[in-house]
Length: 238
Image (tube, rainbow, N blue to C red; front, side, top):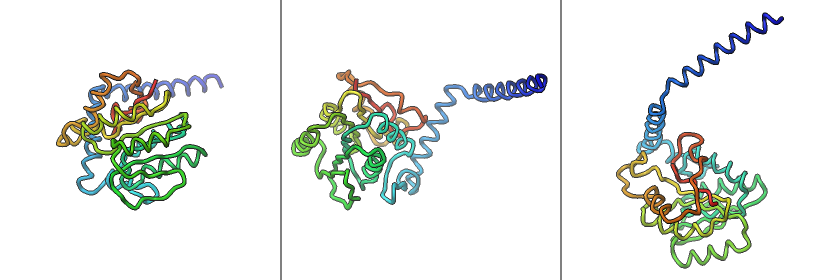
């Protein structure tokens, strides 16, 4: 019996060593290169009408990487925000997704803002605001909506120009409560590593914002699944 156990143990150790050697074969540089190449392949395939531009949640267009949306549900489950402010609604797929997660947990509301007046899915937890996220009118409405909310999370996904995102960061960071997330989406554009033609955008705005604001730390959550459309964009308020 003991001999049989030792034989099995030796086999398992040998198998484990093979696995370790095979994984060690991929260097850090090779790993990053593989991730970057797949990131570009995944993102650029949208030019042919596929991947993230052809992604839906319950039939509603949702232009996000599924790996990021999975991270969102983990964040919401762990941090239980009372209110999630979303700048950039588009067709409402992401707002519906967030509201559905809140439904499962039995708590949380979504306040989502966009300049376009589109037909969007109704939901008891979603409130749609029409207007620019940086306009005084919208900011005043947001201030009213946060009254009484103890845990507030913010997602920035509207105009992706550097100037606009920086203004959003300067405004909306104050609404995020300690222990909650401020997520800057699409920091991958302008060559980080995709869509180099975009020009300065969310990543550049984020870098500029962090030069003068130390209330937030970059969370390792964003790199959990290796690929994210929001690299460095998961900020946790201290």
